[in-house]
Image (tube, rainbow, N blue to C red; front, side, top):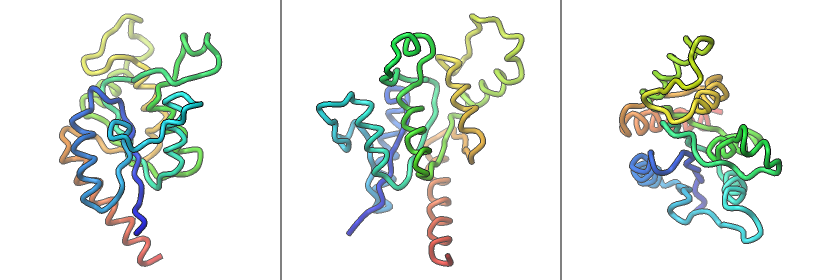
Length: 180
């Protein structure tokens, strides 16, 4: 039987515990969870690792995007100058890959990160360049949140917040399908 494929996109080291638990949770819905650390992605020999991830995103039915306190590794790009000066993270590029072809995305943002984001928005014109935020490693996270905030987002404090929202959304999708 075919199963819905759900791609989990986030930085790895800071959200490892969330990713591990979410993988099991997705599988409990009889869906296929797609995470790079579980060897669910075919890494094409002629492509960079991140480009293989973007290709895998395009084979999925849904994406779960989790934004925590790290912006993440640099995506492979052609322009070396742009790559060094103003790079885009692999996580952001995964999201862009899903968006390009209309894959629905559930977006979760750590509550502390979102609180820092609100502080940033309120004070962005007066913040010194060397200002440090308590819960983020790079203000590029805030630029990423600016991109995703036009969609439904859910902040989370613990993994149970993600699981509850996910359950509600899956129920809503099933309902729409049945009455549609």
